[in-house]
Image (cartoon, rainbow, N blue to C red; front, side):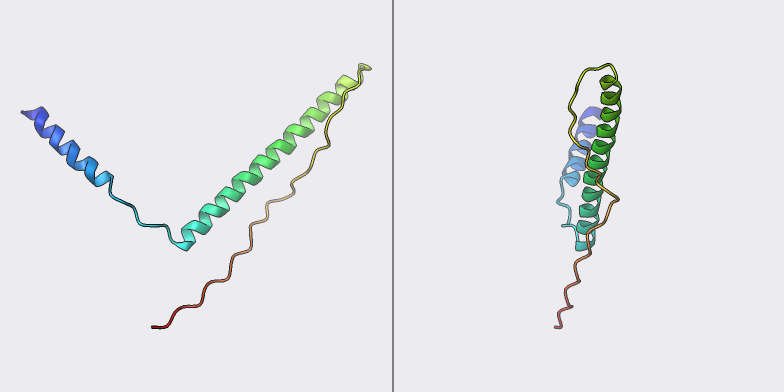
Length: 93
């Protein structure tokens, strides 16, 4: 009997968990876009750091007299957030 009550309670709670969330507002969308841009820039910086470390290893390898070609490293520079879009004028009703 207890297990049936627990099962019914769990079903009732799971239905409320499936309720639809409201759509994000413009501010939340802007924050999400900026977070995605920061993540993408961090990936570029990590790639640049990896390239520089590979250049160091290649330089040591070249000292042994063996040629090795490495692609040039492109510095992504500092993170620059996108300019905020101008807010739409408020509608008068």
